[in-house]
Image (cartoon, rainbow, N blue to C red; front, side, top):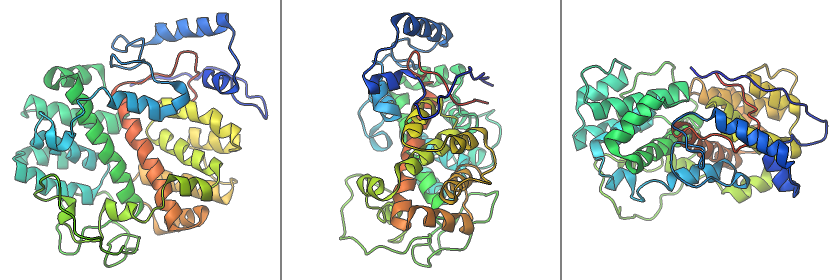
Length: 398
């Protein structure tokens, strides 16, 4: 298990934390001696399997710190094959469905699991392998390729760290570019699991639910959409460009992640209607839930500059009580903790979050923002993305 000791720092009231990205944003240049010493120290601390240029496990160029976590995740994605991973990867459909299933299992996502279990069986994944994932059983006796995908998922989602041994096994078996594609697929479905949980997506009427859950899903759902959102008008019929056996498009119209995202108005609308500090708070809550040091440490100084109270940030950082915080801030912290902890949000917490952001359209867009950061976090975790040289880690790690 990784250990983290937070170095001391001084927060000057009303000023940003002194990290390298803020020097860049301000147009100032840190002292060559100070920055050189910090860079040298950071280089010494890099693990053996981390590239000194990219500061992750891939031989890519260094991401631009000004681009934030999205730029780092995009650089990792760019090291993939460029193929549509689910449909075109040489890894093969059975193993790719397995990658989706381990993601659904570790996020307690019944809708995602149940549809993809049917698809996995249809494309030839051994039902015994599926049962190992479903029941969280030992991996002994499984094939090496199946075993490493399951182990990678358990480590990334359970420990928020992919061990060098598991990473090396995966790259040896699949190749670096193909493994980037596999992780990117898993990352996208991790984000989808968050969307489904936030809006309490139940199975469509008459569809079996195959995943044992540690909770009972709340019943505050629309009878048609089977989620907390009302059904959208049916779109014009569209032909699929890729084949599907039991894909989501075969479920009754009005259910699933597409239905949920259809209630949003997009990022521009979100930024116009929800205060910037609350958006930063949602990102920090997500980063805390996934132990995403890169996102947290680049976001915290920006959030402080945007007006997010340091006391609120410290509650998220430490996992402390929300008592005494503002109503909106407390609502979003509790919403994120339930969404990413037990993977189910109570009706009361959902209602509070809805009120905090001003309605379902904004909440859909806010959850979409959080889901994108989940996807990015999975990539940053898998490829062990380290902070830019000289940037102080601000998140205590387990």
